[in-house]
Image: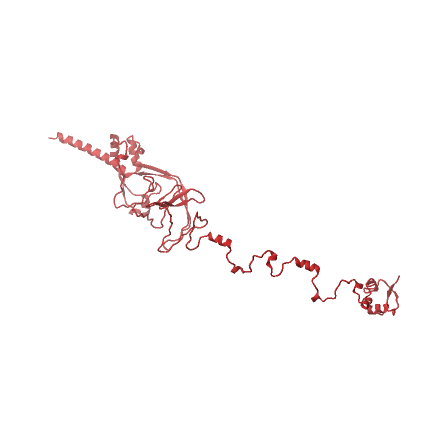
Length: 379
């Protein structure tokens, strides 16, 4: 069947109305006309009929209300979606009923925070209990000009500050009190008390002593004191009750002692010459090597006598920490000190001199005896 088309009709709505009233006769037209042809609107409701009847169902909109956008109610689906949302201003809907609307800057300290804070020490005048530790950088104790840093203990005796090798249980030294005086000691590696210029060891009792009788030496063969000063000569104990197998020197020992007196010479230290040149002073005494040779020449074992000493030591590397600058000293960077292995001979001069003196006394006695014999035969 041919398409219907109405030529000369610019308004399709008017054409439809005329057609509805029977005032327009159809003519034959091409079904494949351009967009806007009857083909595109044949299956649409008759708009003129809708306009006439006023029934919105004729166009499939029976459920649509003639309501402006501003007055449209909330739909069922919209309400279902809204029911899943929190009510405005009601924080309980989002599980925050205990949250206060307080800015971060004005938030109070919570109970848990206060409990944690109560376990911390105050920055000023801290007071702590239990075991306290520090790791990381250096620990500094600063005080004003009139107050020293203080370590207190309820026990006067056996109160110690212990020094432990990093990360382990090895105690390398301690400083403390035995109830009356300051004591220091070490049970592991070396424990050092050092002063930048002078090291002052002061005791109210007037005594600086080792922790036990005859338990420690002053210096080592490779760490010698440069000099010593005393107002009186050192006191060397010589109690007969503490000695055994006391005897007089034999004739061979007397002969060796007499020869040792002849080995006494004049010398200068090479280290002093390096520092002072010709200004290095002269010293008096034999060398240990000469004494050893003389003793052996008389068939005596030189190391059987306490006046001859020989010590050796292993090489070591010492890492020195950096020293910060102060008002009276310059900064020094960390440095490594390498000490080579070595050995050294030494004398106990008090015993050596006694040995030589015995030889000289015997020689003098012999001379006096000979002189007396000669005088007895002279008329």
